[in-house]
Length: 102
Image 1: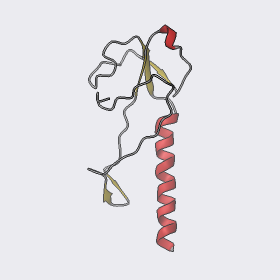
Image 2: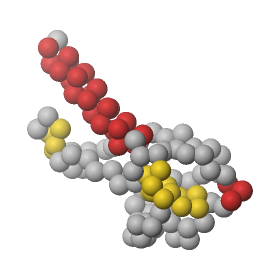
Image 3: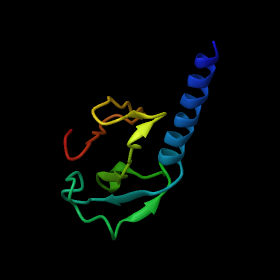
Image 4: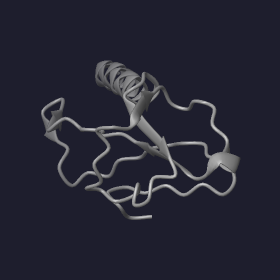
């Protein structure tokens, strides 16, 4: 029972870290950015915005970029090769790319 409580606390902390990484700014944004989905695109001149600001598709396609780094280990367990789940809600007609792959 004690181990279950420890795991619940660990998961709550991890969830808080993920929420912090995805909700508190640090997203780079640009509309009409050819090649914006390429992993090596230079986004240093893009606007920095919180996710998800208002924008209009009538002004052209929009790109949001963010680097998310997972820890090497959680509770001493290596994360390399472990699956990760990211959940987002997108409006219709939006595509998501991870490392340039749709």
